[in-house]
Length: 115
Image 1 (cartoon, rainbow, N blue to C red):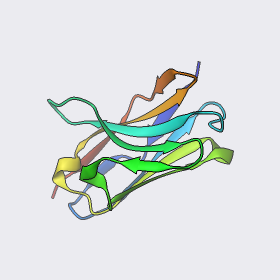
Image 2 (cartoon, helix red, strand yellow; image 1 turned 180 degrees about the vertical axis):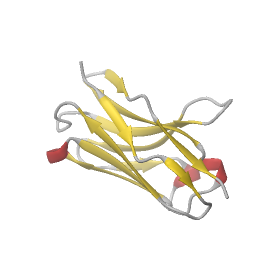
Image 3 (cartoon, rainbow, N blue to C red; image 1 turned 90 degrees about the vertical axis):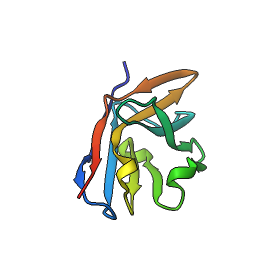
Image 4 (cartoon, helix red, strand yellow; image 1 turned 45 degrees about the vertical axis):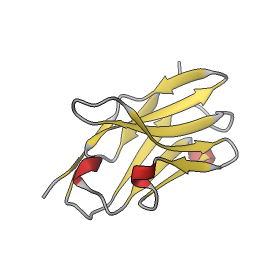
């Protein structure tokens, strides 16, 4: 069973930065894609950013220009660099991996943006 463990969440002031990490229990080299999703209180889970096997990235409009997704195949880790954070970015952030049609999820890490 593949395990994904997120870390790096916390409390940050508006305009601040955080870097989330997602450690995967096996090689991510063969994963079709990796991604970050978030779920705010009372809202549905939404896509934040994706990175494909080949390194192509895509982002939700709400985070374009502020967030950057990356991966380190050697470390089996996916990152989400979040800059210029806003209160509306407050959510639980979940890591996702898709491999041969199977979706794997982490339990999430809480990001709170507040002054």
